[in-house]
Structure formats: structure tokens, C-alpha cells
Length: 72
Image 1 (tube, helix red, strand yellow):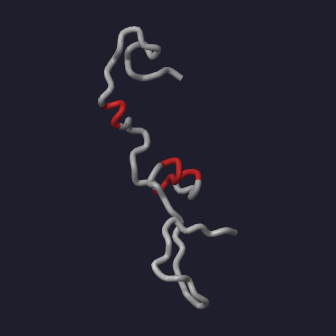
Image 2 (cartoon, one colour):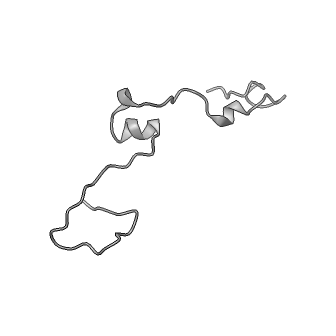
Image 3 (cartoon, one colour):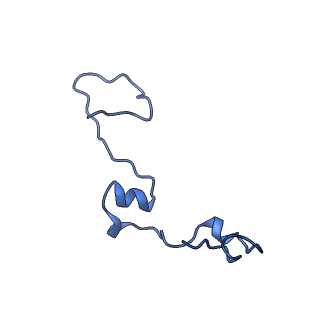
């Protein structure tokens, strides 16, 4: 196993130093599901459209039929 630090240590690491390692989380549903298998405890709203959807508007002749939602 390899450990990479995202920030340099304020002091050099010495023998007998102790530390705590915590798994990082970017608070996204995908990370909660894929890395931690913990979707039951996810405290966000992954199905609610984001800001891009909120400020969008229909465009005539657009590939999604002008409704702002692309068909799958």
C-alpha cells in the first residue's frame, strides 16, 4: 500500500511519530456509492437537478425537443 500526502508536513516525519489517516470524501453521491458503499447514509439530494438545469431555458430546434432535458 502506498500513502500520498496532499499537503506537506509542517515538521519532518520521525521514527515513533503517530498520526491518523482518514479517507477523503468529496461529498458526491458517486464517491459515497463507489468508494464507501454507503448510499443509505448519503445526506445529499443526488436526484435534484443542479444549477445548470435551474438556469436553463428551452431553445427551439434543440436536440432535446426544446424542453431542456435530453432524452436517453
